[in-house]
Image 1 (cartoon, rainbow, N blue to C red):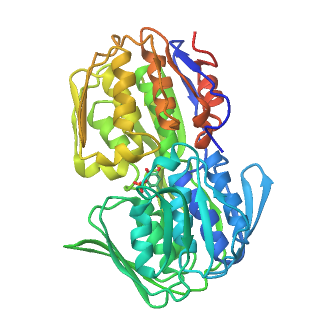
Image 2 (spheres, rainbow, N blue to C red):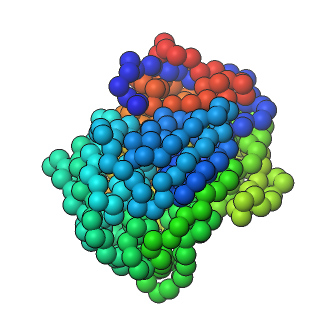
Image 3 (cartoon, rainbow, N blue to C red):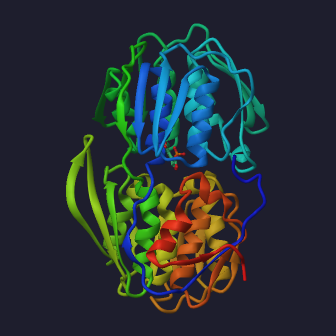
Length: 450
Ligand code: S3P
């Protein structure tokens, strides 16, 4: 579990250009879903390229607690022996999901239509995050929940003994909520319908279909209508987890702001529900190209090539793109500081309820390091300093948020003075090889705040 150990301050400073190949780890969203759907199938699901970050390891432990057998063969190869839809047993202990909103929300959905009770907790970040967005729709299936004030963890879910299918319009753009409802719908008889007004990442729909569930998706005036037929027998799968575009964002953005850089990030999924950052960077004038475009496992994939880009300009990021790059705004705001002109990011209220309030966390750190930031409840803007004029020189708080910590490490690579974070330990939740990978490219990240 993250955030409970001794904080490790980290500092990133300008070094030479970043050069080479960055093999980033497996996709976090797909890794969680591989374990959970594997646990709900009957028989052995084999997974290669699983992200072995703390978030996903906490989900693996949780699946064991619900009765699945999970085996780590080493080198990213895992097996899950599933217990079937409706086959979860009652865990003996509290389920600790660490830092992971995806883990806890998806698992709550997966258990909510079985006649079992489970109590969930997490670290100080997760225990502040809103869970009513998941427990509200789960109540429609017949599940009950008791949590702390404001619908926070620790929280107990009493699964529905006689679940009924639901029709639910997701009130916020959230793939976690959509996925929790779909996973709950697996063990409800009849058809569960989820409607989302804005398309969010569609890994659950794709993977449910891959596991043999009957899922249809229709684009209508109401939005995307996803219909799942309950009580399927899920068939175990062989899954090769693609590399994570949200992790690729860090070496890509680091190359764009570090003079002389040329970095190749191979095998990155360009699923349109995830690739908004790369389109935005290209709109800003970044030298970012897609090489060797291909299809793998039904998903568009390319090798990303990012080169130093001193001529980037600020833009208005289209709000309708927000869901497809929601995790990438922190590092985009760092790139915006190295561009010329203003970058406006609107329609991003959800950033306030991530692992941290990401607008607040980034605004504080950027301002401390000499960058002008303005913000409202659901928007923020960054005044570019130009490629060679970002002052840096200060320590930022990472607020138990991996993406905040990594974003400020990227800032230090191009800024005039080193940039530090008070605690780099959260990086291990999603990108445990970050320091080594960036170091191999030529970055200078040290574990101190001098
Ligand atoms: C995720 C959905 C997003 C994203 C998170 C992963 C997922 O969260 O921020 O990192 O795997 O479903 P929301 O559903 O809260 O938008």
